[in-house]
Length: 71
Image (cartoon, rainbow, N blue to C red):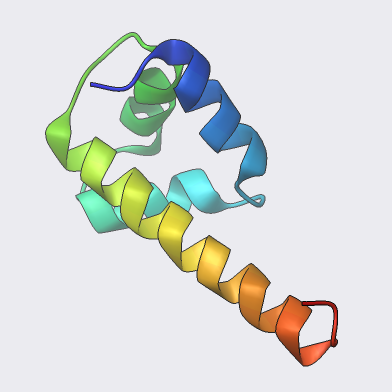
């Protein structure tokens, strides 16, 4: 499982609305995803969804930077 510090760093880097997307991917309530980020609960399903959404966001950001000629 991921430490609370790492969860906070991931959450800080995700855009607005990501908790809703993670909840959709994990088929969980948004409140449950929020509790995961706070370290109140541990869920392999939510963790996997976080990584999916986080990875998707990184790829989107890299594409935008590339199109803008910044990388």
